[in-house]
Image (cartoon, rainbow, N blue to C red; front, side, top):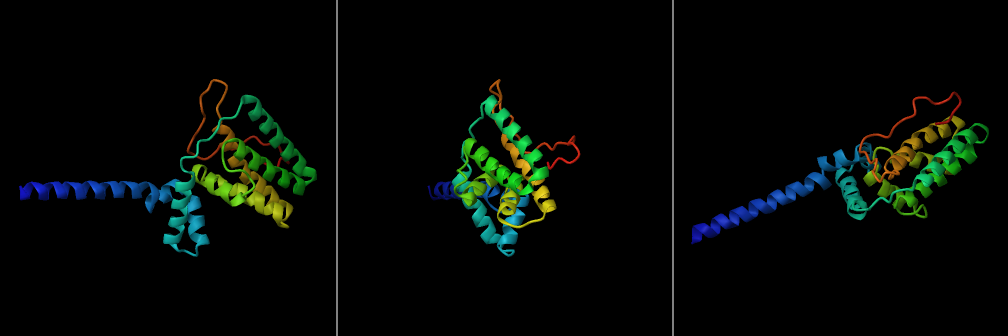
Length: 200
């Protein structure tokens, strides 16, 4: 009887250990590095190299926003967003500052329409976006920073180009007319056929 109890106890301990290790694979250490990619490195740098603090922050983001359901967009909404982004690019040529501000507001609204926290709290919104779009979220931050700062026209142009990745990712994840979703985990599509003088 004693031997049976010992065996049962060992099996239970092994099962608990396996469960904890499996959970850590998705929320800690290498699991977080895989999930967040460059966002992991940026967070570690912001914590002055303190990996433990950075991983705690990223784990909290996953807990808070990991199960967030992304709402689909109607086809007409996707078309409207695409048209507005084109207008932003065209406006940049004559009025870079206004175009950057409009891009910032457009991304905030698009993210909200997809089900992310509204742009009233930029930090909360980008935290949530980073959980689902870690590869693209920094471009949005760069645009938001450019709106508040006094960057050069070239810096604003680079920020707008970088933010296009998140715009494409949010539209690419949206539900199309057939009801299928275009969600993907890789980097967003980049436009290789931009016209000369286009901002992004």
